[in-house]
Amino acid sequence: MAKVTVCDHPLVQHKLTLLRDKTCSTADFRLLLREVSLLLAYEVTRDLPVELVEIETPIQRMSAPRLSGKKLVFASILRAGNGLIDGMLDLVPSARVAHVGIYRDHETLAAKRYFFKAPAGLSERLVIVVDPMLATGNSATDAVSTLKAEGARDIRFLCLLAAPEGIARFAAAHPDVPVFTAAIDTRLNENGYIEPGLGDAGDRLYGTK
Ligand code: URA
Image (cartoon, rainbow, N blue to C red; front, side):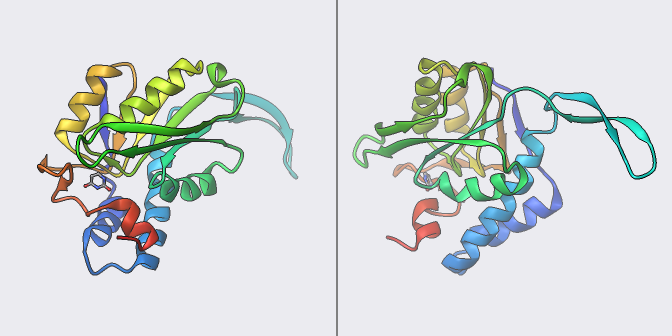
């Protein structure tokens, strides 16, 4: 079973409440999602490996920690995943970015992939896959399968909201991939929307219907 971490930081929970509110404007939604994603990125990168390097402060020499290993990859599941990427890049500007284009068939709720582009060296990098909503789990499962097929081995999944059904489906397919979320909501409704949720994250982010 995949490990699930709920980020219960008060700032994350406060901003999530503002995001859920249906009166939140498109501009505010975009800004809040960027802010929350920076905080979630802080949580998902908490245990990154560091190495000691010799530096000289204006006062004296010292051994100081810095990130070790290859640059991270943030993999955005299009299109709503892009709402998380900018905040994450604010925190880790050197990260590489992969894009996985997936839409869901509104009849079957099945994931349909139409685009994939990723940086080289996936097998040596930590890959953090992002999508605001882990709903059915189909898109997340497909995106991670694709990244594994392209060589990724060290993967984490980051979302804003998760449905219990989505977590179960994802964990069954990828028990090795830990999930980070700001909240686990009640359930998935018959249209595949998370309840109480926040509606369609992509539509709210881009002002579409
Ligand atoms: N995708 C969304 O944007 N919202 C949901 O509630 C479920 C899937």
